Every structure is written in structure tokens, then in C-alpha cells.
Amino acid sequence: QSGDYAGQEYVMSMGEAYAISRDTIYAPSFFRRIMRPNGWNYLRDTWASYPIPVAVDLARSNLPVTPADIDSLNRIVIGITNRETGRNLFRLANFSEMGYDSSSTGEHWNGVLIRANAGGPVNGGGYSDGKGNLVRGLVNFATLTRFSDSLSGRHELVHTLNIGHTNEWVGLMNPAADARNPASFKLGIRGVCYLDLYLRTGEMEKQTGVRNSLVNAHQGERRERGLVQESVIRLP
Image (cartoon, rainbow, N blue to C red; front, side):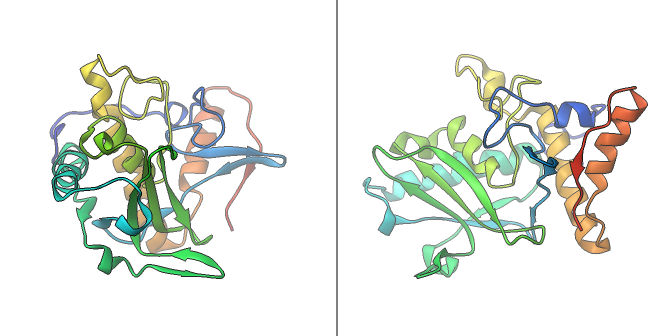
């Protein structure tokens, strides 16, 4: 409908979306699922509404984040992601909007926090309420260059949408992305089509209470292709 690939088409495959990448721990497939002792656990959480507020957590960052760094985060990491997908997924917010609280039960906030700590991890992800909803996200950077990095910066931000890794195509969410290849800096038409499907399905499931639509689609496709049916953990 809109975005960098408006008017283009791509024939999607659940097998491609759920193909296991070489990263088999945290985010083994573009549509995330993890093998448990009793079967595949499909992780179907989505945010309740968009755009998701994104704020820099200066108090819990040890690097000197400047207004220029935050402007780069907004223009390059947030801005390019929204433009490529044709969706207003993220918006820059003030930390005061995030409702941050730290207590004996841990940290709590709304939206996505960005932290920059030298010597720290570089990762991103979302936190679920256990009922199919992502309620907060966190992105950790170890250098300030990540604030204006349209490869790793956007990669980690997209993880907060509950999107994982893939080796099925060259693009932003390929863990082996090569910065010398311009295609590595984009989700690409495949990534955008799958992300759109994931978000639309999440919206439908919230409206109808149906929570296994992508699980059923994936296993149904396997059945049509004559592949062995997998053991899966279906959501209640």
C-alpha cells in the first residue's frame, strides 16, 4: 500500500518465514519460534498500538549521548524504518513519557528504551505480558555510532517488534549481514511483506481471540508439501 515497495508483489511462504537460521538461541527465525522439550513454541506477541514510543535512557547509560545522537536515532534508525515499511511503527519520545519505575519486582516502563553503555551488550527485544502482548522493549548499544547506524541500529530496533533472524535472504535481519552489500541495510521486499503479514495477523488475532493462525498456516503448508508434521505448543 505504501513505503519503499508500494505496488510490488512477493509470494510468501511460511516455510521461509519460519526457516531456522544459524542463530538458534534467541531469534532463530524471522517469525520467532523456539524448540521446547514438548514441541515448537511459536512466539506470537505484538504491540497493542502504534507508533511505539522510543526514548533514550540517559540515567542508565554511561556513554555521553548528545542531542545530535538522539537526532540521528530519530532520522536514521526510526525514520528509515518507518519509511521503508510504509508504517508509522515508532516515534521518538521523551523519557518522561515512558512511565519508568524500578522496584523489587524489577524494571517497568512503556514503549522502547535505548541504552548506551561502553563494554555492554548490543541487542534488542520485546517483553511479553504472557497474553500475546508486547508491553515494553529494550535496545542496548555499546557505542554511540549505533545511534546513526542504519544497519545494526535498525536491526536491533526491529527485534523489539518480536521479529527474529533469517538466513533465507540478504537483508537487515540476516545475522551474517555484510556492511559492504547495500541490500544488508534494508528489510527488503521480503522482510517488509512478512513484517506486514505478522502485524496484520497480530491485529486480527487480538480482535477475534484466535491465536494460532500463523501456526496453523505454517503446519498446513508443511502438510501440503508432504513434509513431516511438527510437534507444536498451541496457544490457549
